[in-house]
Image (cartoon, rainbow, N blue to C red; front, side, top):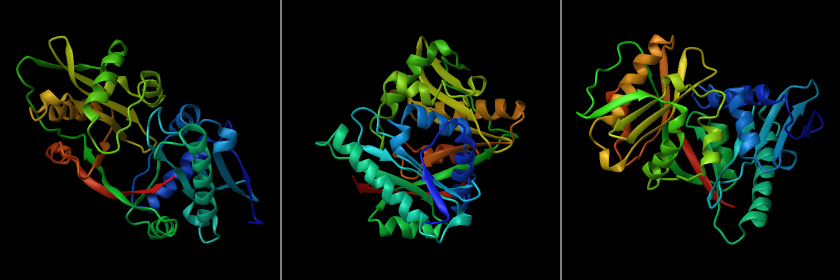
Length: 311
């Protein structure tokens, strides 16, 4: 470690951290696309104390070699998502073990302070092509918890889908944010790994994010009720828009609402100059979401594995 020094995250680090996280994603076979503002959102809204719960490993030339962020679960949550990694060009010096061990130590300390009687799980993720990271997680006792798919679709020639009678699709407006939040919590409450957030905590990471694209986001309305929604975001991958959240009221599922929302947004994104749309999918989602995405033109870019270990 003589060629490296460690310090916490500070203002101005977001771009370098995003670049490193994208390089780690590329090593796993994925497209990356995380923007500096995404990193800033996590540090400002999910990390309790950046001076204590972030670690940057910097080489003698001032280049970022590794990063570890330890966000807290939302209030009452159980899953702590460890974020970071070591740049693929700087592997082999033991940095990965150092960063992950530090993250687990901080997670345990936060658990003891915040919720000592609750069961917390630390989660890490990696693409299946990143063999060194897979070995690192296994070395630390992580086990496979879930498989995910990173998918994308071209915005050219989006599918034509006719919504249900009495249902209208409309552009997202800020006045609808609390209805969308309420629907988000109910639509995902029974799905794997979901952790509900208060409105303020949810909004900070979604509709108040610097990358949020309200012009490309949609809601499906039946009468006065919002029964489906799609929230879209810009990314640092040129020409690619990211679909961050897509949900349908349970009573309205399997009626084509998700397909209609996707088709409308793919068309709008294409007209806005985007060539592709991307999203993440739980490979075992019981709602049939993966099949819906496939019918809408989405194909798999890479397979991602989520690992868990008790904190």
